[in-house]
Amino acid sequence: MNRASALPAACAPTDDVANSADAPSPLASQPAEPAHAEALRRLLDRAVRTPSARKLTYAVLLLEVAIVIGFAIAYRPFDLNIYLWGGRAVTDGLRLYLVQPHANWFTYPPFAAALFVPLTGLPTVIVVLAWELATVAAFASACVLALRLAGCRPSKAAVAAVVGAGLLLEPVYHTLYLGQVNVFLLALVLADIWRVAQGKRAGVGIGLSAAIKLTPAIFIVLLLLTRRVKDALIAAGTFAACLVIGYLVGPSASRLYWTRLFYDTSRVRVTYISNQSLAAAAARILGGVAHVGTWYLAIEIIVGVLGLAVATSLARAGDWLAAAAVTGTTGLLISPVSWTHHWVWVMPALIVLLRGGAASRVIAACGYLLFVLAPMWWTPHPGDNAQYGFHGLTTVTANSFMLAGLGFLAFMAGQAWRTRPGRRPSPASIEL
Image (tube, rainbow, N blue to C red):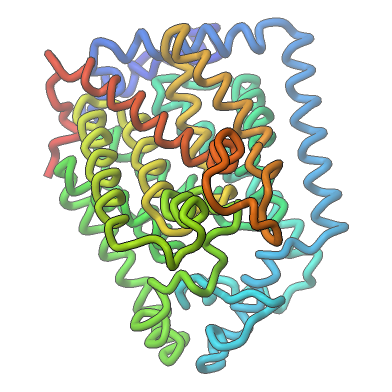
């Protein structure tokens, strides 16, 4: 096997996996993939080429981690407080869904609340600190997985550069600010996608993610469409097992959630500017949720079908990173509620764009700037009637994450179309 130590670059194509008889890798089996990996390798090489650049990279990352630690000690993240409340309330009948902690509803399945039961007896400051540092670690893991799926074996300096830049993305720092679960779900799903790309069994991470927050269930559909039937069954089985655990912990809460609440969007403010889904954009433009007719379902179905078709095409061509990024983006677009902190899928999407040519990298740079600045927060929102209706550039800005997601799907559809001729499905994508 080719070892990483023999390659001086920040990233090296993972051809050694392809040389293993028991682990075929679509990343190395497709003709165009090494060129993509080489483009990304050169880019990361330039970023951490000199000793001073590497020192600066580590210094910036350490500063960011220090800020996270200081924040965790001084502040109690809002959503994490609700999670911990859910851990205390899950065994108390219907209280989990009939009482509002901190003037907000607990909206996740009972299984998600059950996961926080062990944390409820610990000092809050310890829980917050561990949670925030674990979030950073999970994000670093997700970055490594994304780079490896892009065909690279990242060096420590390259990973530090990607993680440091990624922590500045609004979905990531907003996740840290609220104490949200999004980064953990991203890492779980990418871990499964990495196993799929290697031709190994997968599905537990996807099933667990879907049981915590329903939207990752779209990846089960991707597994089915790419003929990874056993993996899809493992994911579905994991999801079902988690539902059973949730029922055993809180039977009455489970019955209420799965019969009445899991599809009820009235318990959150759908039109709040942080919601960057297609449904939220339609509701804001048309003047409220009540003004959005049943015709809107056709839009969601079209976007969902097209997004999954593009992801399936990319996966069958061996490009599982692009397939995952497209699937994650599609899920965000068609979900009724996709807060800005849900958009952590921008990280793998940006890596997909960075490994392309000059035009693709320009798009990546613009996308990175957009997701760092998050300009929707500069537009009118709660308490201002100007958030409703169409107001030209203001409305475009208010829905910028959603529009960027649509643009990414359109761009990747073009990529899938251009790479389709002459491509054959890789062994990993057709295994039953």
